[in-house]
Length: 271
Ligand code: DGL
Image (tube, rainbow, N blue to C red; front, side, top):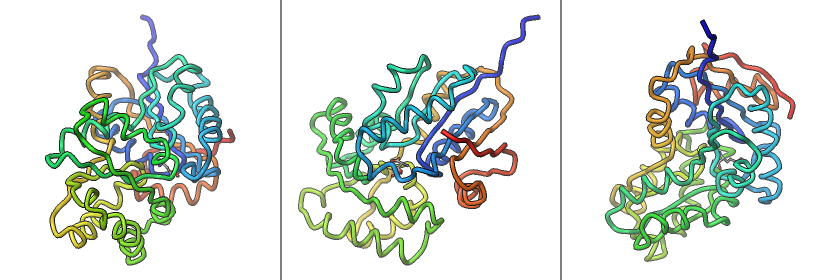
């Protein structure tokens, strides 16, 4: 009988943030084999030039796809998705999914005021990728974007619900929300895969500043649903391999707050 290899998806990010996406995929498709890479040695990507981000992304993808045993690549990083998808798709012969379009679609579906906020890294915000993706779906919706780069360090520190996190959110959001246009947002896209861990803190600070609730959306569940349709019935063994490019001790300690690592195989990789 012909032996077929298990179905396997590769997922990558600059750090542990992409584990929020991996967790959603694992919940939706527990039988699929998953392979994750966090390029922790070179984090953050969000403050770097588009050229450097593209170079790093090609190296990360090469490492994940080298053995030809992967059926799809999820770029679980908004920064990479905002500037390197064309290069990844041109170089590799697997389906490459980014996180911007699913997040934009979720925001367009959720907003009633027609004003959507986006927080993300400097590179993601400078790219205008969310404004473009939203305009392609519904040109009547206005996107207001704000770079909030320090949140990546707070997430990598595991400070999800901490006074320093509330203070940082307030420092970024208060001046931004003073703009009457921005005040109309009813939906906020967590445009960085590190940010879903701040859902509680964000709801609290936004609620204080706007005196009404704001809907938070991110790409993890929409991506997982998309893969769920695409890979329904695909057979893997539920094996999870996790790779990092620096200190496994730190990766396991902080990454464990994002994804249950007990049954995963964890290894160091050099790009
Ligand atoms: N998690 C990455 C993103 O979604 C960015 C973090 C970084 O700056 O490296 O954009």
